[in-house]
Amino acid sequence: MSGAARSAISFLTCFGRPTAPQSGALPDFPPVGLAVGLGLGLLWWVATAGWGRLVGSGVVVVADIAVTGGLHLDGLADSADGLVPHLSTQRRLEAMSDPAVGAFGVLALAAVLLMRFVSLASLRPSPLLLGSLWALSRGLMATAAGSLRHARAEGGLGSAFGGPAARPAVAAAVTVVCAGGAALWWLPVGGVMALAAATAAGLAVIRLAVRRLDGVTGDVLGASGVVAETVGLFAASSVLAGGIRW
Image (cartoon, rainbow, N blue to C red):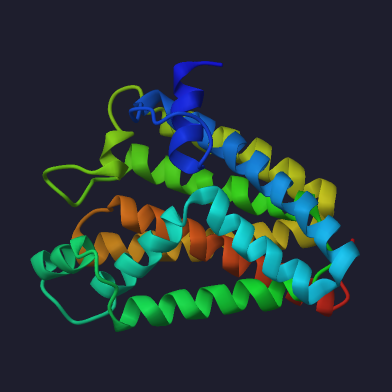
């Protein structure tokens, strides 16, 4: 396994030894997301078969937090505290750096966790669905980290993966292969619709950050991924509820 792949696994999951971020690791983000999603999807199927949809959904939500170390949810809370209130750019960055979670962060976490749970509970377990959405979310993070300006002059986790070797175009291409392939295998039309909704939601978070911070941060990238996954799950449940199964 290459050093870049180990760096991606160490950063995105709780597995492996701590490894310094490498800009060449960005194309490895989507495959790592695919693997995490497939693993969670298998757990979803087993837990639902054993204990029913409600317990199975709760197990997946908790397992996702454990596998990722809650990194992206932390980014969501910090981003909500910094991007939602009416503040100056500097105050927004300061609020996002504060380890304490404010009211906006708590509300964002509660809303996202609730929507993830109810969306999972309304769906039949599918490793391919989670694999496609988790690959997409990591691909969005990687592409944005390698191609957009970083808001903090002193850098951070997001900028640590940038640089000449970042290859955001390669990361985007790998995302299309990983996320698109899994989604098409799950449901040809429904999968594409779920990915489209997820992509739009993730890009909306990134666009908001660029407008209000003149760039992105590691927290913003994590928030965009979590929002993309959540909206994708909701879209998938809505598609199936509407009878689209082809």
